[in-house]
Image (cartoon, rainbow, N blue to C red):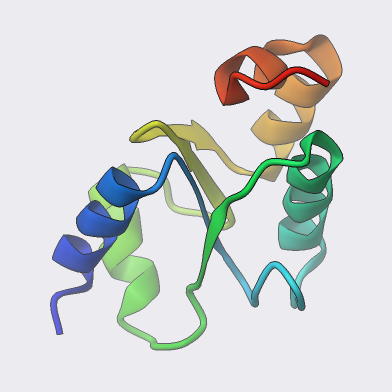
Length: 103
């Protein structure tokens, strides 16, 4: 399985993608849970990918994105960052603009 190609396709086909530990219904780490909570705050629909499903997923995504840690939030094909960046953007209003939603 070529996870890198699969991830490119997922990113291209979904406006908002969160690569996370667990799922949006059951995050298994605090950082992933925090990003899910922020996205839920805006009421946006997002695609989640559980990067714990296979040992090969994390290195493939890190290579694709150039970002070594998880979760990773992509919006409109662009990596925004992980938990700290997402929270910072939420707090300063930039995430609202990036998500292109009205709250």
